[in-house]
Length: 118
Image (cartoon, rainbow, N blue to C red; front, side, top):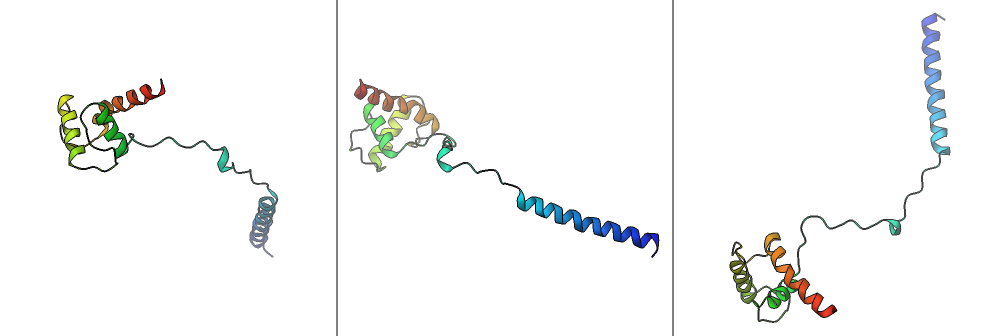
């Protein structure tokens, strides 16, 4: 055998031995324990808070702009009350409760909760 052939065989044998050793080490290695789902903290909500329709209606009612039932359904009375609230607070009166409107309106929801709790 030539020196080149021996060298090639030697490197092939080494690769085989090394890959077998790696494989056995992998099989014998202990995997780290995964954290249980009960120990994980819930993630905070992403993006701005989106209030429910009932929260919007209650806040509008507490602010004196909504006289209908707090039923969780957006209808013409809820939209009109939202627009009136927006106009009175120098906001864009589009009848939609986005982050800016909710920031102003949510204070009326919080004040009602505070009044009930005290």
